[in-house]
Image 1: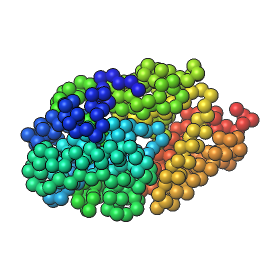
Image 2: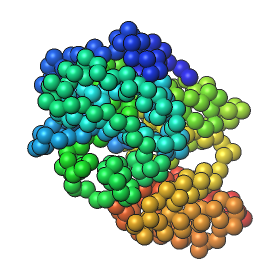
Image 3: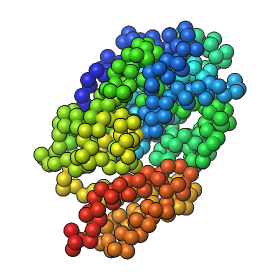
Length: 414
């Protein structure tokens, strides 16, 4: 693991669940400034251009403004730590190693939107993260900054750690709300959005763990400081979960806008066994593949989108020449098929059928009829679900079909 100009992964703040050590390292200063001038919190985030780090890259200040402006005295802040997608492992590190960084960000969010309840919604498989967060939350009980926050909001603060359903689909915002309301985590179409109808039908702000981890540093150091951390027009840093056929896989915090070439060949040590780079699944396995012609791309939300892909969570799964793209895609589509909640038949049946077809093609048993069926499914399935699961599965299949058509050809014609 490499740390260069680290903010979130700074070794000084990796103090586990010790609140006193967190404060000794500078923790609490961001929350103090937020409590002094709560009206400046959202404008500061807007000036910093902080984006959501859970996948979409949506401007954080817009979510916070919508929740702050929603009517009612009962509001909620939810830290979404459901992280379950293959190749993504940033949130589990933050929750386990820097829990107070996450908590302080969530408390600043509560101050901004006037929420008296903060829920840390964590994948139950992240047992270390849940344990660390529970210990850390307990240390805030009766704390002077909690008391100051309660005076600001005019209500007692409640911080809870709640295991999620452990399902991949459980990280989708509407599924988070359903689970916290005591129901199965079925996603639903939006609107209404969580800020309109969230936990207990009240306005709810839901942010990813990494997003909230940035908040205290921005409030402490200012918007200009955060923007200057990025490269080009990008702001801040990004956590990249680098895995696959690289010599040094791991979690890397780098300036937003770092090139794909630098991530893989400088920080990741290059390719395993001296093999040539073939492709990378960006932001997890539900986006368009990038290939050698894209190694120059700046890893920020807008630049990656310009290459018809998405930065997503920052997961980068690298594959080398000699690795079957079809085999990897088959593995990921099987994951999506198993992760489908089943409420939308086109999603449940479509991912299952794509998985079967891909398995046959990857093992040399595919027919021309199988290939035609796969292409047909890619045409009819997008938009047929209540969430983006089916769209993500189709995107990676379509991308592989277009980028590596020779791998889908019949064995005799390869």
